[in-house]
Image 1 (tube, rainbow, N blue to C red):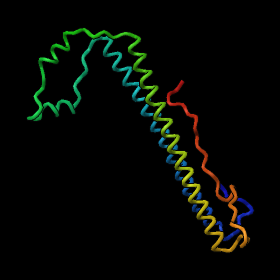
Image 2: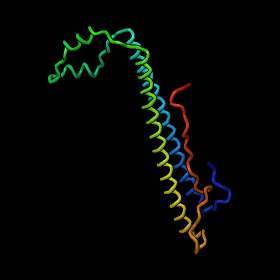
Image 3: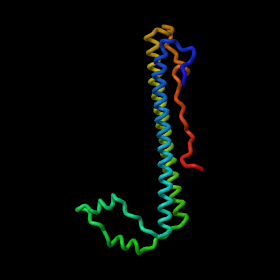
Length: 171
């Protein structure tokens, strides 16, 4: 953002420094929102993969981590339990799939709410710190009436806007 026109020349550098911090906070918040959206998309893809595997009655494939864990001396794989699990036909239906999707939606709705609350706290704390720094700068430069405390304009120290409404999943 550009500095306001009525800003004294002595405070121009302070405005630019604070604006760099506000820009960094905006960028970090944008990245956090995008990471949350990508995480939600990955989780939905995982649910669809599990549903496809369950509807085809296929067993869950081994991951590299589970193979490495089973190679440890202390972990003996339970082959009998795996064979019993393969013999039992799983009962997968659409209601179970929609339940999984609802669980993912609930989980990410909660994470989104927590993210927005945390970002609001970060914005409020940055604004409080920058406002206090601005007041100190005004006192140091004696650019205010000595009888009254300095008043900080919203133009001089703007609050970072937060995007509260964003879609976790494309429509």
